[in-house]
Length: 96
Image 1 (tube, rainbow, N blue to C red):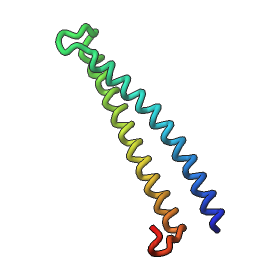
Image 2: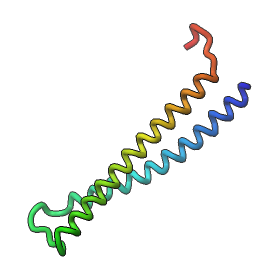
Image 3: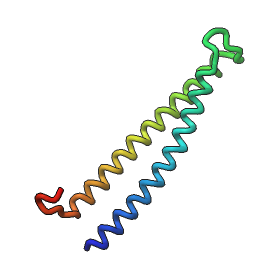
């Protein structure tokens, strides 16, 4: 039983590491888009029209929201997996 729990923990750790890599990539995208958005001048931007500016702003906002949502999903997955592991691992009293 102990070997099975260890294997499950190893697999969960590997999957969570992959999720972290995906989130890291999303973070880089969100940071870069934010940098591009901040480079837009506040006055008299030379865009074709306001629709393009609005569309770009919405894209940045959606990307940041998706990144934050992914972080929340990762946190939920970590909590769920840790709950399962803690139920399987019995810690004798006094050995915390």
